[in-house]
Each structure stands twice: as structure tokens, then as C-alpha cells.
Length: 305
Image 1 (cartoon, rainbow, N blue to C red):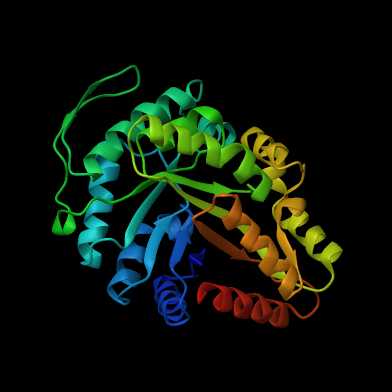
Image 2: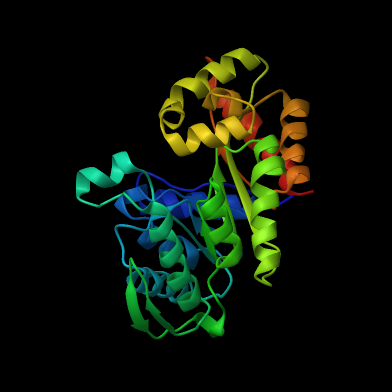
């Protein structure tokens, strides 16, 4: 199974140590939230130079705060710093109105914005020039230099129909958060696959991110997830993806239970259409160290299968 972890650390040295350990333990990838160390790209570049095989992705960087040409150049620079093609994936999304409006961005057309943004960004990171005159962007630009000429994949944080179409038509897939197996099977996978097929593009990647904890008291684990991730239950996009999964709370989306139960739920994600599982380990209970160790041990075991 392709299983990755949330990336991060209190400083760049901690990020490097985490990456080296994750690679040694057989995890396929590390997914860095955009807020890591203020901007995760420097940390990713340093960790990439200290490892040899593990993939680094963002989950996600905001589109509104960085022009697509600059975004392409930034990621090409990080790929060059890592020095090995095929180890960097750009996860990007428009974020949410409560985050964008206070810093001055007009959030009235996030779908159109993301549509044009991804067309430009994905083309540049495939090594193609762009000449676009849209409603949101007017851009004429050549592509950045790419390591060994290899494209940098782009994943869109796509939860609704329009962005799933954009992710399938223009990008390499989607990176999800709070989408359980039912949401992937009934909503995400059919829409993004149909869009990719219609555009003549390869089968899309579907990276499904969820909190996970191996813990015998399921109710306690779900209560912990509900508290720690409560904000996602207040945002309309996440409310809709939770509803597609037949649930209403982030606590219900979390993958929790004993080893057998968690393994079954992760397997169900892949059977639903996920190509990768981005695990966000969540310590639970009085002995948080023991919970953390049990969770990592199971994830490492599954990553080897």
C-alpha cells in the first residue's frame, strides 16, 4: 500500500530527522501542510537532500497567495534542490473564504479562479509554455527548468464537482481531507475519473487524508478527533464532503479502532478508489506514547504490503 504521513517539525532539523526515519520505515511519502514553518518549501528542499527515495508533497499550498507562474518557479527550484526527479508533488487549493478575506482576497469566484490557476500551473510544470487570456489571469510565460525534464505532478484539493473536474481534466489528481471511503467511492472517484477519461488524461491519483489512531476505545478516539479537528466541521466544503460520506463530524471521519479495525478501514479506502493514504496519526488516551507507537507500527506494516 502507498501510505504516507503528515510532514512537519518544530524546525528544519526536526523535519529532516522525520523524513529520514519515515524513509527508513518504508513510508512512501510525507505531506506538508502549507503552514509548516511558515512555508514548507525550504524544509522540504533540505529534507529532500538528506533522503533518497521518499516523496514530498504539499497538502496544500494556497493558490490565491501566490501567482501560478511564481508557484511553478518555486516548485521547480525545490525539485532542483532535491536533485532527483519524481520526488516532489504540488498539492494546491484555494483555501477557504474565512482565511482569504481577512488578508484582502476577493473570494467570490473560487471555482473559476482555481480552474484558470490549475490550467496555467499544471502546464508550466509539465514543461509547456502558456498563453492564457482568462477572466482571472492573463499569462504568457515559458516553463521553468525541470530536473531531467521530468514534470512535477499537480494535485488539486478538490472536494466539489467543479474542482474534481478541474483535477481530472488538467492536473494529475486530487489530494483529499476528511473524505471517507464512502465519499471516495460515491463522489470523488467517479467524478475525477470521468473528467480524466474525457480529457484523454491518465488515471488520476487520489490521495485520501484522514486522522488515524489505533486505540481500543473507539468512542474515546472519535471524541478526540471531534475536538482536535472541530474546525473542519464548520467549513462548507468540508461539511459537504462529510455529507457525501454519510457522516456529519470530523470525529466520524477519523479511522480509529484496534489494529484489525484500522487495517480494514484503510483497505476500504483503497478499494473505494484511493491510490494513496495520507495518514495523520492522532495520539489518544492517557498513554499517548503507546497509542502513537501502536498506530505507527500498524501503518509501517501496511506500507510494506
